[in-house]
Amino acid sequence: MSVRKVDLTTICGGGLPELFARELRDVMANITDINTDPKKPRRITMTVDVYPSTDRATCALELGITSKHAPIVKMAGSLFIAVAGETLEAYTSDLRQQDIFDEQTRVEAAPVQKPYILQELREKQS
Image (cartoon, rainbow, N blue to C red; front, side):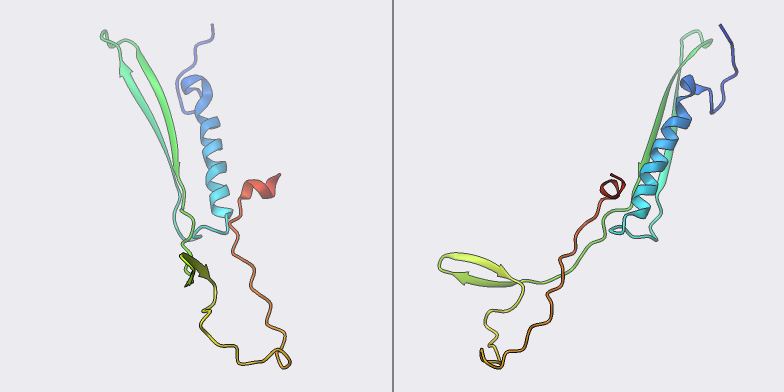
């Protein structure tokens, strides 16, 4: 049996560096997610709980590691409500707005903007 002093690389069988690497990967994925605020800080918190025995000669250890990510950025928009019979419906434009062009003089409308799609970094990595 080899005896080693306890440090950050040997505590709990050497699990701390592996746990830290996993949390760091999650934080980096959150940072590169275009749907999050790039200026918000991210945090990795490591805890070591030490439970001494009654004779104070040995201790039980528990490692914990958590990370706090930046939330998805809020989006703003609007909708127009219309009544269709007894049903309420939502539209992107006001249906009460009259069309100023008749069918013959109507110009091709500007392309409709694509919807904002939340992207997952994990999808890109696949």
